[in-house]
Image (cartoon, rainbow over all chains, first blue to last red):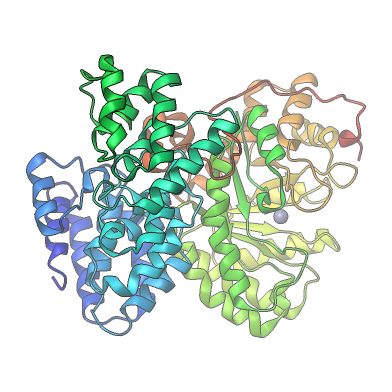
Length: 280
Length: 310
Ligand SMILES: [Zn+2]
């Protein structure tokens, strides 16, 4: 296999797919790796839906560990057979000048399932720096499942997005109502600009009388400034149980001088043993 | 539960989607057609086809409606030969995609030589990729156009059972059924076919191989034509079984031959793709919940109202 990660994908499919489908995939993988015209790649990438269905791979712990070892932060727990077969074909593309333009052409004419498969597979592909613009384009979609293919369980954005697109992706996740917890690198890529954007967003929601996701405070805590501390104090005073627990978790990560003082005023929250994953 | 197998949803509003879902339309098929404004380059076609398999599919899902499509070069734009050549080259890529249930809508507009040429090319393509065909019969010179469309299909070796001939009327239906094709009827308000006439046709010919659709598009048309016609059929004493055939099952059987549309897609919750589940806020504003599986009651049309008058 041209791209070593395709071996892992093929191994998972081999344990689950019928022999015919697997033989078909091997044949197409071979043809694409040997430099078949891009039309062959496009047609078979689509046709994978005729051979593989949407049964989840349902990977076990050891398979997920193997995934993380192959690509740190890659969590293919939600991958389906069809998407996996398509990822194998993507991995077959020769690593040359035509690689990134071919991915662009593929996505310019892709249906929803095809977009999901390609964006999910980004961290497995070579030439990541040439795919960054395309990944950013993907985060501009309003099709939630496509957005999640990049934002969730996928380390590509953590590894290759600069601060501004990273921040936009996190804010958009809140905006379209998908959880933050599955975003890979959420804590390590927290930053002051994002903290400010999120607090402004919380104020907008409050002004409109709408609920603020408790997860929002996760990216606020580590960089909280005076205003953000005041926002967290407001949540502690007025929020529901979820919001208060989240504010307490956020304050525990804050180096701000007032954080500890606020927490000590709310002793009832000291015993909260929830983690951020409990809010997703 | 209704399947409207001919809706140009890109031209419709979210109100239409809400009304269709409330009236019990569970799935629609959107055939590629002319947009009113002629396209001048192949990129416009590519983006249109991508929209049918992408954004519009998602938009429909937000209202609890499953969206399928037919892909083809329409007869009007087949008359631009240089463009038509490029569009034909593009078609195989889209015909291989999920949820593409037919080559369509194709056929004749003013029965020019170029229309004929690209109609035939696309019939061969349909055979090659093993998909049903949706035929748009011409609005002018309809009787001859319909006959000729079927003859050309036969000439190219297509089984009549894989071809849906759309936009029929009282003058064309007998021949279409006699020759073994599916006969679809578009219920237009004010003109052409109306629900009342449709009832008479089903009474006369029975429900086999007859399909009712709205062809709702950018013109005066009614996205509720299928549920309204069903309600009128009920009031006029047609059996539930006959009504279900012409407003749901026949279309499912015809286009189901593609392998790309099955009742399980909307009946079996477990079959709904979990990553494409009816969620998200793409077209919803201000915290509205998505409309999922909210099947309301079919509105009964007033038998004297406009949409029933021919
Ligand atoms: Zn039409």
